[in-house]
Image (tube, rainbow, N blue to C red; front, side, top):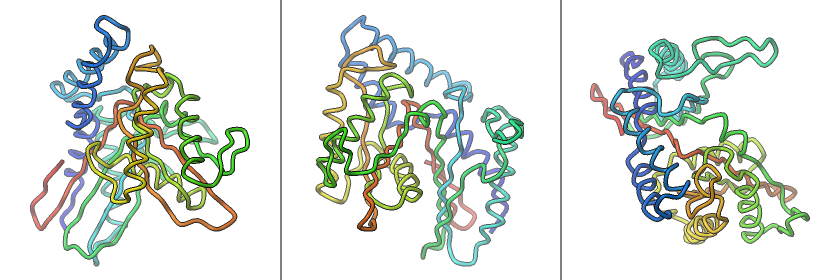
Length: 289
């Protein structure tokens, strides 16, 4: 396979500077339903202006470009080590071009690497599949919304939440309530039910790659996504915590098998700047979405 470093740089640029159309549509619809002249409407109007300027000037939508998280689906025979090296090189180039803010900090020394590379930074998950093409998804996960992401262990006696979907509902709504305006609402929730602690967190973030208008193949989870979106917006937290009708723009849920002793619910909170992009490589052809 050809050297894809430049293609990865372009993927990063698109994710950092171009908010997906489904997110823009949700923000426009949210603005239309808020009270005219309210703080909520003004906040959403400012967000939409910012989104337009970022695309026009090819500059980051938010100053915190977060942790780059790559999900890579590759065919048999492709070197994941070579791909990882190209991705790391692309992150360094993207940082130099100001598509990314230098965000990789050594937790022991406090030193910033200056180029968004470090120990397990950026984050990469590799998945071999049967297709004879490469598919790469990128999520830029900001630090502010990451700080209000959380994980619950059921049962939760404080919330009277048992080991069932009603218990899941209770802890998810509690997470939204606890976040309030922090994490830059309106947000998108990626939720994982089950798994161990680590797998559950990974699965929850993977849900954030789903378009807002897709439908969960599990009917129970599809219904729950709609219910949580509606109930979350009834909390009245609103954009940036100013109050209003729009606290959430989307809810996406995935499930993992668990061991009998554990029942985890992980909630990956994503701010309105749900920066995601994808790249497909088929032969010599490279396409982006």
